[in-house]
Image (cartoon, rainbow, N blue to C red; front, side, top):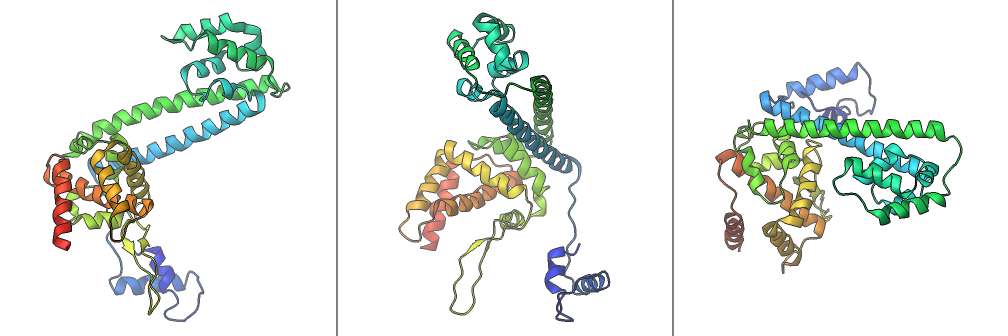
Length: 328
């Protein structure tokens, strides 16, 4: 495959013109192929392709759930804005049951506290409490929400709640499938030994890189994720170093979000983060440190998947200490 970006950058070499048409493009592509400036496309096989498809489907479900959440929030802002002062999240069980059975402020105010508690008790082992029900009735009694067009509005809300339940169910089933697929990948389960690394991080990493044996160095994976450093300097001008951001579009944000979680839960990575921020020479900013630690996480993942070794915090920190002494 010839990279379309390369075609765009080289199409002016012959005629010094930005012209683009169906006669010129094939000639430019043929010239790149003749010079060997193409790459073989890697298509994962078996369980790796299954994981890649599962991760893509998860992204679709997440986007749909976010959209539904925004639509329900909008509905509440219009018809019952006080609802969110009683319940912080409409997706919690008590709030969801209330919207299911008593969608409008009028219905809630008419039902009263006892009926609301009865609805909650039907499906909840532990109800939200009398005080919460009283707050809900009081909020409904003084609601400034729109009072017209409620029949169609209730239908719209119930449809959104149906969609939410369906997508939540599909998401749970997909997570179970991803777990089953990961059990088929050698050493993938050992990645969960790292505190803060969960199912989604592991599935995203393995699905996006495919078979780890095709890489000879973890820096290749870093480049695949678009986390390799690039420089823009010329003559006396010294440009800032930044990440290339070219590569697998799910792998890069997947690693970044994983590192945010790891820094909250993992003491050894948090120690490295603090060291990066406070070191005497060339201290990093918070974002620079997170990106650097993403590269470290790639090397840890690569070592575990390639060798089958168990994760060891002491060994990881020891390797860094030895590297610093060697550099000094």
